[in-house]
Amino acid sequence: MKEKQNITYILLCSDGTLYTGWTNNLDKRLREHNEGQGAKYTRGRRPVKLVYTEAYDTRREAMQREWQIKKLTRKEKEALIQGDKHFLLHNHEK
Image (tube, rainbow, N blue to C red):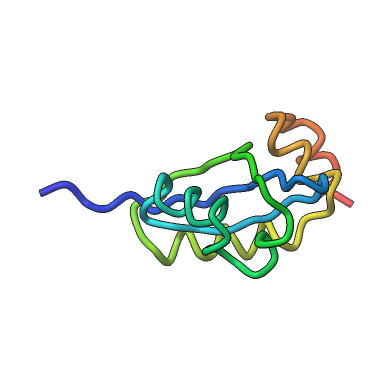
């Protein structure tokens, strides 16, 4: 039996802001965000575009990663989205 996949994701909102969340059904959750059924934050910032995902085996891991990403600065989130590991490593050494 296949385990559910737990996804931590980042959305680009129509006003240029970034929203981070997690789900075990990415297609459904993205549809909810774009139909105004998702988080309050995204309801007035539609449409949203999926710009980043990470998959985890457990809900706990996905939720922990969501929390970590939410603590990042905008610049760090953009580096994560672009795959700039050098920038992220350099900034966390300080």
